[in-house]
Image (tube, rainbow, N blue to C red; front, side, top):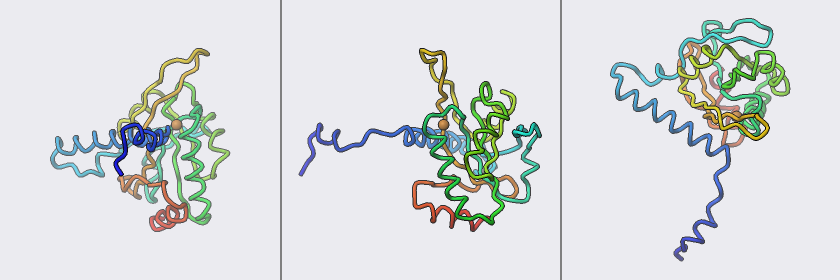
Length: 202
Ligand SMILES: [Cu+2]
């Protein structure tokens, strides 16, 4: 049976904030793909990642050099996020809890350094797996790592109460022990499967 236009519309679920974030991320990664074509001689892993300097909750600096030697995860978001960030961090936590012995570091880097101080980031991640590290930095430091990881992040329009939200791409990056990009972690599948795949890297 052919669907009429109105039926087809009814059958199609409304895109969630999460799927919109994934679409944004795919567009951002496609942008990276265009750059690959335009930059001969650079392999795709070189186009995502790179050096960074950030600040942890204890005030200590964390750089890409400090992470050398073991693979790590990176996720970008902000503590005022109503939906996508807490959901994703809960999913990462859930996968990590399935491998309690693995020394995995997962960085949660703010895209909203104006409000998210290092202490606020540390406070926020304390409700998730302790291997998730909350990180902030100066606006310049955050802009630099966003550029390196091809992150899309933009301040949304101010709300009536003066507060604002951030539109941002939602991608969990798996980086290897040299800090080179491996893949984006697919969390849209059974958590055991995610944990099994991750465990193979650590
Ligand atoms: Cu978010």
